[in-house]
Each structure stands twice: as structure tokens, then as C-alpha cells.
Amino acid sequence: MAVRAVLTGDIVNSTRLKKVTEKKLLKMLTAALAKYQFEFYRGDSFQVYVKNPVEALQTALLCRTAAISLSKNETINLSDVRISIGIGAVTMQVKTLGTAKGEAFILSGRAFDEMTGKDTRLVIATANSLANAGLQIIADYLNAVLKVMTDKQAEVIFELLQGKTQQEVAKLLKKSKSTVHQHVTAGRWSEIEKLSRQYENIINQLT
Image (cartoon, rainbow, N blue to C red; front, side, top):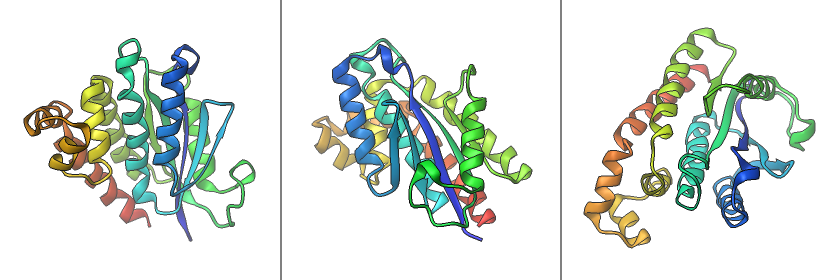
């Protein structure tokens, strides 16, 4: 049985974003998702197929920090991405996401629909109720962290999620190492790393 991950997401408040912000965000999302099979639809919604489910959370966090990093051009906390991660079996070859079938697709779509009207931007769903209990705690904690994350913190966290060191981020963003370190601490990067490792541990038990 092949356990896969499917991300279903949309850009929050997309119709209220400035055109330049929306265009830049779509470009950042496209780059972040480039190594996966993904598809945008209705302009502001997307679906991503990730063969290694361990990578799904990092991918979701990349999408969200990309959006939050652009908040400096918008009203506070306006720019964000809402994402559901479905993890489950996909037995058939995925040729096009629009016609794809499998447990991961069903779980992701169902979880995304249930987010409507709720003040949450990240949900993780599997068919294992015990795993879901742990994953829900991780998702809730990350939602709390990202809800108060500033654009400058998100800009730094976005790069760290891609494996860069603080020194490399400082050089890339043309900031001092002390400034980057402040953003890393205030953005609660250590907690994000711990939660990501816990997520990986749970997923490895499912695969």
C-alpha cells in the first residue's frame, strides 16, 4: 500500500489582496511546489500531490510563510494560505489531479470542506484516529504560532524551511546576523522544528 499526501489549499482573502501581492504570492507558491505534481484552479485554489507524506507539512508551512511574508504590503494578517493535508493510500497512478482518486484525496478534500467558517488555517487528516489526535495538536500549535507571525519573521522562516542556515539567510535577505536571529527566536523556529520532527515520527509509523 502506497501512503501519499494530498494538500488542498486556497489563498485567504485573495479578492482583497493587491494585484502585485497576489501575483508575487502565486509566483512564490509555484516555486515552492515545483518539485511536486500540483494544479491551480479558480485562480486562488490549488491541490498538491506529495508522494512522500513526510514532506507534506514542510510544504504546507512553505506556502503559509510565503503568504505571511507578503503581509507588509497588506492589512495585518490579511495574507495567508489555508491548507488541509490528507494522508492515506493512493493505489492508482495519478495522471491528473482533477480526476485522481484515493484515500489521501478524499481525506484532504473532506478536511478542507470542514475548515469553512472556522478560524483555522491548517488541518492534518488520516484514517487513523490515534494518529489524528497527535497530528491535531501539532496543527493547532502551528496555527497559533503562524497566526501571530509577522511578515519579517515569516520571510526568515520561509528560507529556513528550505534548509538554509541563519548565516545564509542573513546574506540572502541582506540583514545582519543578529537581526535574523531575533526573527528566528520571535518566529519560534525551535518550536516549529520540534513539531515538524514530531509530525515526521507519527507519519513514519503510518507508512
